[in-house]
Amino acid sequence: MKFASVRLVTQQFESLIQFYQNLLTVEPRHLAPGFAQIHVDGLVLAISDERLIGLYNNGLAVAASNRSAILEFQVGDVAAVLGRVSSAAVAMPVTKMPWGNTSALLHDPDGNLVNIFSVPE
Image 1 (cartoon, rainbow, N blue to C red):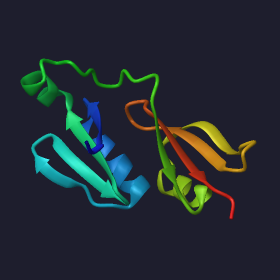
Image 2: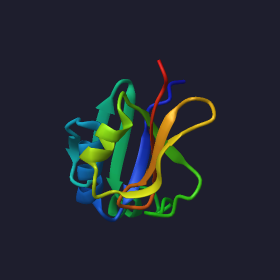
Image 3: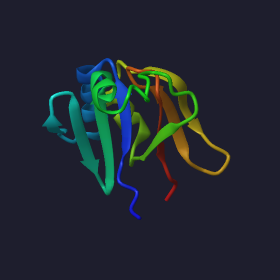
Image 4: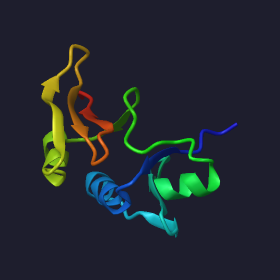
């Protein structure tokens, strides 16, 4: 078995694509209307318009309803990445964690938590 991707379901398809494109500096691959993937370092982040979930998956996923998962991205410079997504809502400012990481928590346009962090050298 292979872990293939994480998919976010949204009613704000273009906004979510733009947010993650700015955050990750990777062009999305638009595979179908309302469906795209962003490939970065072995990770596939899929983004789907909620309309497609209604058509093909019996509406089983609901946009903007996540309150338990955090998408985490290790970066070299947390402050620099924050600068690329300056319009994002910051849930936790840049903080030195007890285990040594520097971390900031953001909300993407759907309110999903995104942790950007760096590991000390």
